[in-house]
Image (cartoon, rainbow, N blue to C red; front, side, top):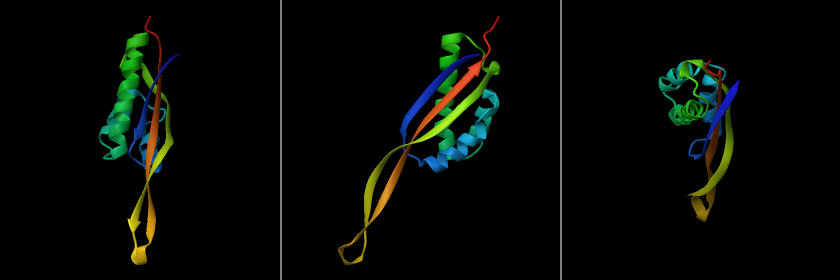
Amino acid sequence: MQKAKAISKYIRISPLKARLAANLIRGKKVTDAKAQLEFSGLKAGRQLKKTLDSAVANMELQFEVKREQMVVSEVRVDEGPRMKRAKARNKGGRSPILKRMSHFTVVVEGQLKE
């Protein structure tokens, strides 16, 4: 089995929401996973689809494996840095707002063509 991976960093979506999209494609064929992300309607699905396309392109270039033979072996959503913002409150106070970011890692594997 040959493996290729793609990483997207600093995606402006919370990891909890992104993991919902990641769970949809884990362990599926690439063609099924791509269709699942396209029609899921999730913001993270659009971003994860770009990362999946990059991993597929890496696999095609490095090992000359067709898309139909590829499987999504690993999808990981890690937490990135948080942007700290504040919202004004009464009596000069403030309440913190954390804007979370994610790092996506997609690994595809496939058979070498013979």
